[in-house]
Length: 365
Figure (cartoon, rainbow, N blue to C red):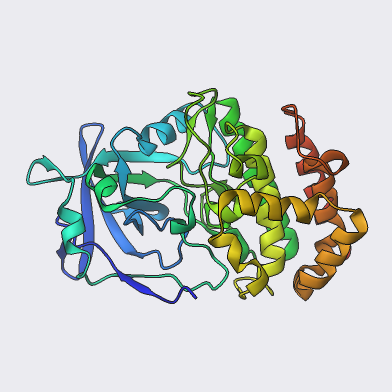
């Protein structure tokens, strides 16, 4: 369903010379040239008129960078969160390299990019049937909202592929464990991610790539832990926790539940690495009312164990059938006694990671 092709923004900050595209940035008082290798053609950073390029420093082609250009709320600066996380030594979260508000002819770009969405040599292709668009996030943007946004550029030191492209089941499980560790590390640094869909969990299986083996991306919705009670929960709807869908103040516990929905979704929608399928029974999760989806999800997990096993037997693809007992153990951890959590429990991080490590060692994997 996602075979649309989007034209990249015509960007006056990108220079073409001798068949090579590059941008120049002022980093610590020094001008650096970043050579663009190409547009990232999957959707891990798509949304909000976003374009992501793989790039490298002109003098260091072996160290990949990711350039993320997007329209962001003027009151929220993803780059500052990423810089803070990197400075604090957060692990398994995409590391900061540079960020800035894009200026065109010396002025902050607040509308120009939106006028040129129909031209450009690069294309952003979203092709995975089971991969959710960021437009399915619970918050939506009207034309009026977009006019209040600014065009920001964030450059990251980690490049990978979405977790559903993992080459083996153990590699997938290890990456999921690594991303949970990244979330825990970020939370210890005082930052709550709040958006855990399949496209924000990355894996790096290239031994020559110095990026994290597994890591989280996209701090667009991140807030400081304990931020204003008036800031309602947000996220990508199909992966949001039941309580978050019901309007509860967001907790790290909601994000941990989202990791459960990530593995649940992938086991149903993927027949192998990158082999996404459409499952009509769950298509409505993308569109239905938040409270209706919360009730539906409750009916999936707050059930007799035998019913949950029958559900998995019916809908998990053959490739992911060996994960059935381990997904049930995750369900028991996230929903103790078949109920939603009442009290925050930081030990849930360790219990979920222990289950995933056990699954990696299962000979049936």
